[in-house]
Length: 296
Length: 296
Image 1 (tube, rainbow over the protein chains, first blue to last red):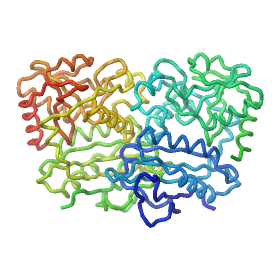
Image 2: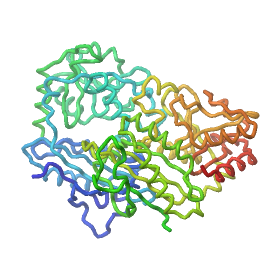
Image 3: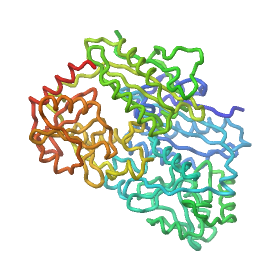
Image 4: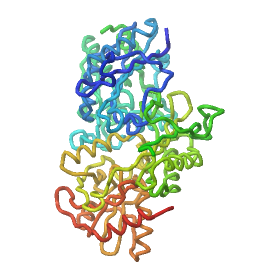
């Protein structure tokens, strides 16, 4: 079985024309070949949206949640609405190409397409996942960085697209480089008015006593698919869960904290801005075990 | 002659490997064909930089300024340094393919390339320009929008890439859609602390008496290539020129104002947030005439 696979959607949105009126909904493509025009707005303007789903035992996880968020991001960018049935089928097709004995992921993309064409571009790319055991068990070192925006920009200034998962991720990549420069593995963003937000590609969860707290998506951040699963798990364990609006100090005082995401899963924070941070190894292992066993 | 043309760079940076060790520095490519991998970081992360140069009478304008800014943007993203000689040659080759009797532009791009490859992607795309006569003479209606960032973020938080011309332009596109929703043609951004910045794809200049004022690039905005030419022109006409840090009120009280950019050139603001704004038709025509006659 291949290490990676690619399916190109013929008609990513039923609101827009197909690339080939007589073509199949999606088709297996050769990853080694070029498939995008240099005029595709994905490449020239980061003008599109994406989702990344984990695949465990051949099963794409949290499909409904990811697809709903994908559609919401697209709406925020006023893209043609993605055909979720077509994307769902393409995700399943990509997942089926990869070794079910290994962890994998599928990334789906919708771009506005070639400038002026009115025909969006869509694809589903699948790949075996790197080994994230170290991050899941030993944990990660995290730097706190300013995200530049106030925590109310999604209400005051929706054109800043806070909370949309867009292809314009240069800042997220630059933030990860800044973290590396500080000797850290990852980032927690703080709003310009000092409120905890999220990581560049993850959701923050922290624990105080018997309570798990995550920053409220109303703060202009993504609603986490992995976080949602973990809150269900925690509630079944008798813990309480809260969406909060918390200053950095709340994280500093937490009993434990994690950056959680679809592919790396639950990475405990073991160092925050160079200071040792408490790790709850037992709960971390239980959360990762729960996610790895899920078959939704 | 074609309406558009494309040259792909074989080795966009001398700090990184060539795509084809035996290949020519750049080669004419068929615009109708795909040339980018879906794994190119231009398309998946908006992780690259660009410049757009105008071409008048077959001559690319302000090449040195654009190439210097291109290199500066690349450095801000820690991309491999672009080979400016190769890009210069590709720009000239693209310009030479297009009808010199018509206005045209060439866009150059450098992306980090396919994820994990370490081989950057580069191209130069040329096209005949749309007719911007109406914007240059009758002027444009402009909406003032919050850019979300304080005006000092380029100093406090360089990972936000303020002042880099990146491929992550989804916000700029969303801002233009918000302007259209308000019945406006374009946008002037204001920092979250109320300082005039720039347009999504242009530089702001306004006039007070005998003085032209433009927001200081130290505010985390691009240093304008067209603005620089216009300041040289204005100084020769006996006007004074200033880089400023001005509140919106300064623009409201101006005698005239323009959004200036390489391809559309000088567009006088005739309406600001729905209010009529004074247009200096004579000076506007002189500035556009000066730029159109430049052969640098």
